[in-house]
Amino acid sequence: MPDTDGAPAAPAPHGDPVLRFLRAADRTPDRPAVRDGQRCLSFGELADHSARLADVLAGHGVRRGTLVGVRLPRSVDLVVALLAVWRAGGAYVPLDPGYPAERLAHMTRDADLRLVVTDRPDPAPHPGVRPVAVDERAPDTAARRPETTPTPDDPAYVIYTSGSTGRPKGVVVSRGGVAHLIAALEHGGLYADAPRTVGWNASVSFDASVQQWARVCRGDTLVLIDDRLRSEPAAFAAHVREHGVTDLDVTPSHWQVLSDLLLDHPGGTPLRLFVGGEPIPTPLWRDLALAAERGLVEAVNVYGPTETTVDATAAWITGDRPHLGLPLHGVRGQVLDAQLRPVPDGTEGELFLAGSGVAQAYLGRPALTAERFLPDPAAAASPGSRMYRTGDRVRRRADGTLDYLGRTDRQVKLHGFRIEPGEIETALADHPDVAAAAVTADAARGLSAYCTLAHGPATADAPERTAARLLSHLAATLPPYLVPSRLAVLPDMPLTANGKLDHAALPAAADRARAARPADEDGHLEPTGPVEPLIARTWAEVLGRDRVRADDDFFVLGGHSLMALKVIAGLKRSLGVVISTRAVYQHPQLRELARHVEDLLADRP
Image 1 (cartoon, rainbow, N blue to C red):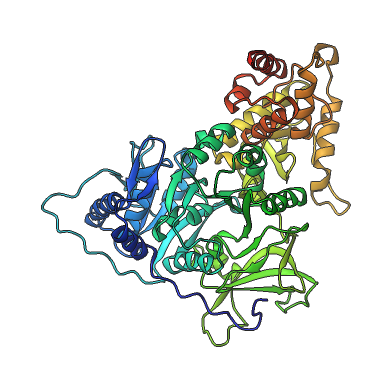
Image 2: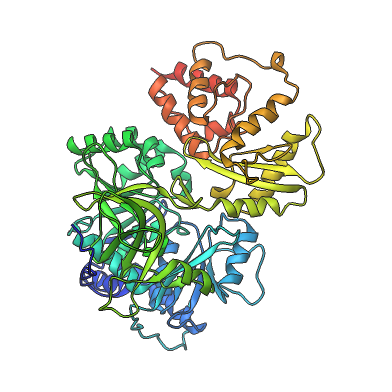
């Protein structure tokens, strides 16, 4: 059971991540360090490439603490760039090339970036920002940069998370926090002693990526899994098997569409799964526990906010009941009431986390930093020690493990993404046609947006066109994971008895608004034949709908890429056929998809 009175001693780190990488490169220069679909670099080559780019960055003025933007796809070059920023003493700010230009511009301004490492010209260059090519070389006359000697307090990266006020916030994490993360996972036996092969599955814009890519610093081999592979379950599984991936980080939602493909071909070594990003449903927990008993996987549930350097607790997945497990070594988890007093075991409270992994601050936001990062009353012997207020409601069991009970606010985790509905509501309300906006979220239906219009009631056929236009506005403003699956235009917002917005009543209000519009039931086609009804049932289950018709469009009904993966998994179970995600996009109408599936079935031997 963790020490809840005094901070447990942090595991002694083996040094800064970069120093560990250099030792690994010296030991095994010829062993593969990182590979993507086209290239592979050995540890020696990765050390050389990152040193050259670090020299270039140093020549442009990068020193300890300098923030450097990195705008690269998930590739070998991305690992080179991240290591180079660290070797020059800087901290990286990931700029996902798939994000809207407006989002990237905000992050660039907010972080006051002067350099961005990239592999292509910026379509919307920012004044005062110099692009640095990932293969740029320092002049021959330039002096070779000495390796910096970082301190644990030097920043390592700034990752932007969704903000409740409509403004994303940058979380500043230290080099010591990254060193603590690696050492704590090693201490807990979650990282094996011998080098492993790690699948890098997360976007670099999310903190889960740090737990994956930084493993190269301890001598593990990285196998990059790009967005194309992520969208094709069969190709994803084949890639994992082909490259001998032994350790894989997944969200529960993603594993549900991969499990059949990967458990069917477990290989010689059980796949070690790091499952996190959102709560694990009880049925999935039990399935994973059973697979672990059979020796097919070694599954661990990892939990932690961005503000505590990725992971703060861990639990091997066994038994029947999901839980967060125990705090990692060097982490103190306190369950407190509204007055910041400890609550008895078995009593609900808010989780506060302290220790070496606590982030430094929200970049440029001292008031918000002071609100969420509080003095740690249990660390009298460590002046200045702070704890992070997670906003997660938990209950401590008698054995010290923590049960997750929900949030104290409206923040949600969907498909591994941390989402503040307020950010989406602000973006929607910024449109001149919108009078009021609201957003709800649930695991089955994803994000749903609702709004009333500034110019009065819409005509009978206007809401659908208006909704499509407003969703396009959001897609041009927000990253894909924040764009709702559906948007309903309402005549007015439902209110509670005391006049506040009634979020629980929004879906019913949208149903009433649709029912009030003229219907054209005779124009719709019912599913027929052997395949259409099966696809209709799969769509209805995935989309959370009572009825799906043959001429319905998957994406018009609110489908998105992860739902498409669930459709693929459902059809594999019901029909024994594997279709690609591309096929769902190419045949969005149910009847068209049914014809494609029938063709595949007919071609089978």
